[in-house]
Length: 73
Length: 142
Image (cartoon, rainbow over all chains, first blue to last red; front, side):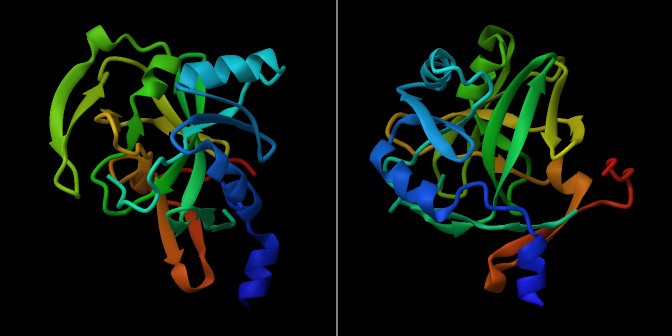
């Protein structure tokens, strides 16, 4: 039953491969496109502008936790 | 709506979804934790800047988080802010957090809007969740 659901489920917002890639960006804002980091920066705007320079106009943006071992706010 | 797989993060395997915030024609694409314990949706204030919201027009208040930290929150009650999940777009009733320096920002979708719109079944054992439209709202077109 789980496998049937998994076969038709939506992929995770952050998969294992991307999660490993994000460890190199702790504390930074990243711009993602098609599940890959396409740009990063010190702010959301900086990451978005860097992505735009690379031709990505509508990236997914978020800040990677600097201290993931801490509890979330 | 289908089942959604939990995301793998450095903080563990958690129920994240991709949502979009709209302010008029401006859009921000965001990864947010589905948090039934959050009174309202909370987004990093940096997205407000991306959406062209003027902080001088914001209604500001303080909020104490679950961890006991006091943070400043901003909202723009007179601005046409919307959240989009999949193809479904609805009013965003959440707020934006100005995180203190040194803290780790996170985005949450909470009860004031997301959980009004959807019935969410968390299935932690399978690391999946089912997100279905509430009977109070029309189902989005497939």
